[in-house]
Length: 628
Image (tube, rainbow, N blue to C red):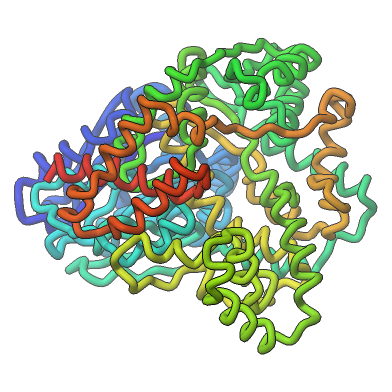
């Protein structure tokens, strides 16, 4: 895990600026740093290193291919690099390797097979910048699911890129304005989905995409080399033909292979254990693959409503892991809140970012790499919302859309239900065109969300621009929506930024290419029946952990943020952020709407998740003002 950065045609002091970019992402790579510039300094690359594989200087970056044609900076891991290395040696493409790093293998594969064929071979998480000295082409590549971040764009008309948006923000000529057209999306979801960022002319490279740019480095060309939507469509058209037991056998085989590859490192490796199905499966299979005790890590809270640590300890004891747990206080969690804007670099408001940071911080005291169970809900139909959408759509779809749309508009503007949040939400959902549209509207919750930002124009993005009906099964369609937007732009952002803030590498075995592609071939009845989801994943887990140990309601990885915001300490912090005069001076948010929502919460107890979204935006905004 590392950080990469660079720019083209930068007019001011290139060395000073690339060093500033590197320093801003020091936390992503505290072990070493390096820079490289072409002879004419038209292309400059920077790298910060967190040493994981080949800790010697042979793994240092920027790295050149043996021929000298290519130079690369790389963030992430190629898990199957040893197989690619063996292929290169067996075919005589390479006589010998200088070191043992995956970066060197990647470079020689690019030279031997070309960029596209090499990426097709690679299994891993990565953000890559590759410069071809012969053609002058710079290529940026992001992994299939979006585990590793990669921002790019233009600052003062010059092309720039980085793992951390803050590294772009520190450039001397950075004057990019806040892009207010993303705020409508942000206040619906609590994050800014790719390809957008909080700044104009700065973007996120989408998962599974490749960007190519050549001199004079003004017109990037973006292409897709892998698409989860196409994988899902192919999987539905070519379903798995075996029994559910045979599906579990194959899933177990694929997961064990993925975990075996992802446990490879020259530094200590462990795993998060939250007591849920996903992380318990990962830890169980890790222990089955390991010759020694696996290190597992859990945080708990004293409040039993939010504490799964006692169950995680029971699972760890059964599996025989070397388990570490840390009970945090409310004050521990509250102390993280002021740090969040700096950690995430742009507005981000999934409140589980707080426990994720705390468990990462504790884990980093013992290991450098931690495996995570993320991905199980989106791939194996784990969220309860999938069932509710299916149930609601099953009742609605028999009524003609035109009639439902008319009734929806009529009810939304009816004075009798204007102040009834439940009826208003139901009226809003009544206008859905399809199960996917219903899910999109349910995320928005209520029409008043769009009034928080003063800017009324909004960009199209995957939820409102992709065609509905690509998949036949409604629950599969919603899982696909989550895999395209929520998972890469919320879950993976949360884990990457929180862990990298303390220089911890995280790896996600469930997002292995083969596992993902197999999961989309499984019939929905192998994933969910009634209210019970992740069936085939549970079948694998129960081979290692008794069902009775796991058979309990999931509490989730959350904190009592609604309770804390009503207490004097955090209430004072919140109200200072949304000070009416400050909001008016900033000219971005609707002060009246912000205070209407806040007062409704304080006086009437009506919590809306947009309150946290507003507070995280304002926390970031104040930090932005201080830097301006």
